[in-house]
Amino acid sequence: MDTTRHIKVWDPLVRVFHWALVAAFVIDFLTEDDWMRLHANAGYVITGLLVFRLIWGFVGPRHARFADFVFAPRVVYSYLRNMLRGRAARYVGHNPAGGAMVIVLLLFLAATSVSGIALYAAGDQAGPLAHWLGGLGVVWEGRLKHVHEFFANFTLLLVITHACGVVAGSILHEENLVRAMITGYKQRAKNHPSVTEAM
Image 1 (cartoon, rainbow, N blue to C red):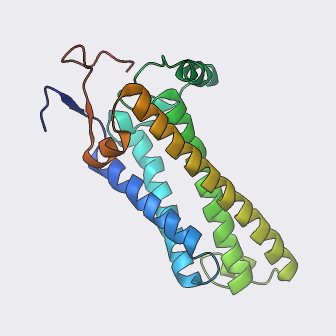
Image 2 (image 1 turned 90 degrees about the horizontal axis):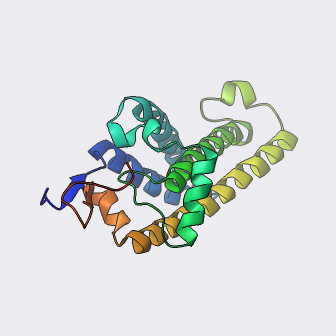
């Protein structure tokens, strides 16, 4: 990779986390009721990935840390307004809107995972919570099913919104953000060999 034209942004663990999470979520969504063991195992993978990301958000490299991409709501709003006007600043790591989406996605994925584990315990008397929730009965099983489906469906909506934001950001800043999450590299500022965008 030509380091005069590119800058390393995403470390290998962030990239593996990202694509493993994508794969596990797709598997989970497609195996909803028909392949419960596979569905549950993919859910456990998501839970483990979320725990890793929480830790890595505090001890990982600069652009992996929450401190690098968690912005005040007014900054997120300002960025979105400028993005709609076609003049939002380019960020090396996550932009304010992308950072907010990461946090919301992590929260809803966590809620989906926890509700799924609870449902698995109540409905199938299986999983780590089976000892405590295995005897709740069909009424609570139905309630947990509705809660789990709500979080799963809303998370899917967030994923679609995230994908649209990636496409919009790629077009606005003339860079391939998907490729950056594969290679780990982004282009440096086009008008100068060093990065002059918003840090």
